[in-house]
Each structure stands twice: as structure tokens, then as C-alpha cells.
Image 1 (cartoon, rainbow, N blue to C red):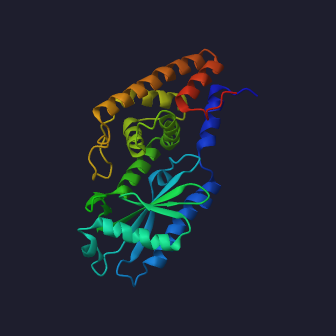
Image 2: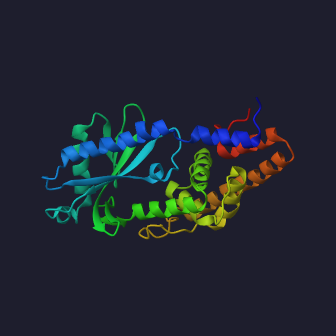
Image 3: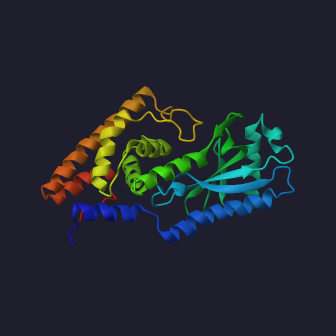
Length: 290
């Protein structure tokens, strides 16, 4: 059966969204593995006791897409016994201590990324474990990569996003999953956290019509890229963009916006073949055109 544009959009969203089984068998299971390993390596009697693990990033927000490539976990360490004082001037030693202990417990490949320990699984995908100390009030000290520390408040940012998603009838997270496919199909010009925050800051209302939501994002985003960290710790989220990178991103958004308008016009005229062809260019090869 030939799909209408609306049906193709629905199938595309279903195909890129994680299933309930994957949420437990992959996402939750990998977080649980982190808890088991760090609890074993850093028990309460350790000079660096492990406290808790918090699921972060797209997996926590519901914006993660298939295939699942990475899961982000915040690993909180206790300051009991003045553990913080031992590492406050050398976050790299803290990071590599976590890496060393974790590598001894896991059969997976382990590497350090400056701010996190990345665990690669033999069956594909990885977990980024960001070890932190709690400074209170949902603010955490995260290794900076140069031996120093930066403050981060990802749980505050997650709560902010969850509130925005609820205000928008839970249509925000599905829309972002589709936008991530656009981003991935077009050179990944936009960092994931930046994309999520721009979209969450942009909409006052958002219905379940995916084409209109996508078209509005592409139209408005070029002039709304300058957003701050919802956790109020990192400043502007555009700091990773050079002047040329910003121009390139804006051009890509405008190009997608022009195609989105043409796709909407084709759908309105009953030309679903053309509408789906255009959405496939925008959203990538996974978009169905049958």
C-alpha cells in the first residue's frame, strides 16, 4: 500500500524511536552495569566512594534515536573522607582513576575522553560515564580535560526540558528525534544539546503535525541559535561554532526550510510522491517513499 505523507511521517518516527524493550534491555541495562561496576570498585569504605548514577542526555529526555549508539550516565562520587580535596587540583587523575578501575572490571574496551570514560560494548554502542562530585543544589564538578573542573547542572537542564515537553503536549521530544535525523543526514553541524535547547526554547505551542513543526523549526532556528545552558552553568551553547560554522549551519537550516515549504505545498496539492521525495532529502535515506 502506498503511504500518504502523513503515514510516511508516522512510520519514520516509529522506525527511529526506541522501543520499550530497548529502553530496558539496552539503556537501563547499561546504566545498571555502570552502577554494578562502580559500586564494586568504589564501595562505601573506599577513599573515593561511589554514590549514585543518573541517566542523562537524550536517553533521559526521550530524544534518543535508533540505532542506539551512546548512553550518557552521570556517576556521582561522595566527598566523604575529603575525597574532593584529593582531586580538586587534578581532575585528570580523578578521571583516570575511574577509567583504570572500570577497565579492570569490564571486558569491553575502555577509553578516556577528557570529561568522561567511554565504554565500548562488543555488541555495539557505548556508554559515556561522566564522573562528578556533587557541590550541592544540583550542581556538579565535572573534569574539564586540562586538569581543571567545570560546573554543570544537567539534572536542572533535564527538568527544564521535561517541563517544556509537557507544556507542548509531549510533542517536543518526537519532533527533536526527527530533527536529529536531519542533523545526522546533513553533516551533524549542530551539537545535540544545542539542537534540543533551541527547539525547546522556540515553541510556545506545538501540535502533533510533524511537517508543520519541522517547517517552523527550520524557518525560525537560523535567528534563534543563541540560547544559554538551561542549567545556567555553561553560558552560550553556540560557543562551539566558528563564524563560518554558524553561517554554514544557518544556510543548512534555510535550505531545509525551503524544501519543507515545497513539501507541504506538494502534500496540500495531493502530490504525496513529491512531498515524500522532498522529506527524504531533508530527513535522510530512512524516510519511507513507498
